Amino acid sequence: FLDKAAIKEDPTTDSKRVPMTVNQVEGAKLIVGMLLIWLVTLIPSTIWAQINTLFVKQGTTLDRNLGSDLKIPAASLGSFVTLSMLLSVPMYDRFFVPFMRQKTGHPRGITLLQRLGIGFSIQIIAIAIAYAVEVRRMHVIKQNQISGPKDIVPMSIFWLLPQYVLIGIADVFNAIGLLEFFYDQSPEDMQSLGTTFFTSGIGVGNFLNSFLVTITDKITGRGDRKSWIADNLNDSHLDYYYGFLLIMSSVNLLVFLWVSSRYIYKKESTRVKEALCVQMEENPTLDASLGLQV
Picture 1 (cartoon, rainbow, N blue to C red):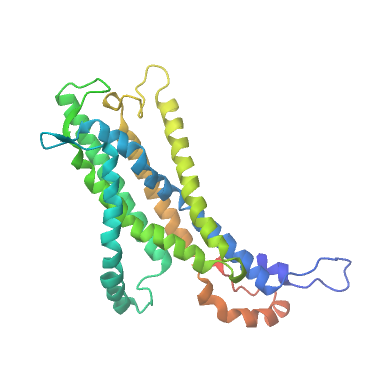
Picture 2: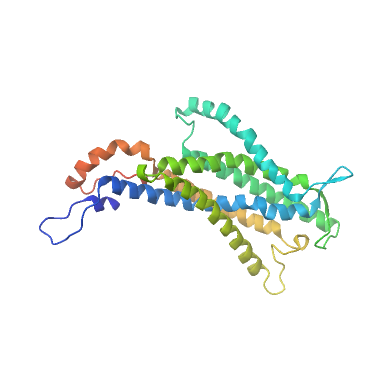
């Protein structure tokens, strides 16, 4: 429907509307497509926010002793996210990309949106593992009849390590892929939009995480019911909340797959721009969409 903005009005009418240029129309369609992709990256940004919030709070309830004299901080496991990224990036560039390039013939090995899809899928696996670990933690709590907020669950904090590592691996696909996608697909005269989309997505994801935690706590803690995310994690149902995040992430992945299947990359469609300029006035039904095909 945006194509109509570039069609000249009938000169016999009194309309004073100035038609947009083809480049302006195509730029608008690119931004619309990028905005829809941005929207489906908010849930993955929310999952990433767990690293510094619930994952840490979960770790404070576990056995953090390393040997007889050393007790590690719960937040220190976050360093494994960075470590797994540092190890995964060269493996991605040196092994994964050349292997996939041979299979697909694509210069990047896989498309930018395929890279994001893989990252989102790994995140889902990470949150599924977080759910399974929390179920086990709750089982140990019941076995040992633990209820105090400061009681330590006899279960090593390193049970949380797989979810941290997987989040780091997912970030190799997500963070780098998102920045590359938004920069690459921005209109030529609006390249700064790429960084804006990327950083704003992370920020909104963190706000969304706080909103979900607050709303979930208020709704599930009404009356005499036990809140899913109470101050005392030893007497709550964090496993239910992780299950909720798992379902939400899975639904978001399906939406992402639908949106990405309709997305047309900017560089794949540049060949139609010159022809579109001439043909649009002659054929108003011409469809040569960039961004999202609607």
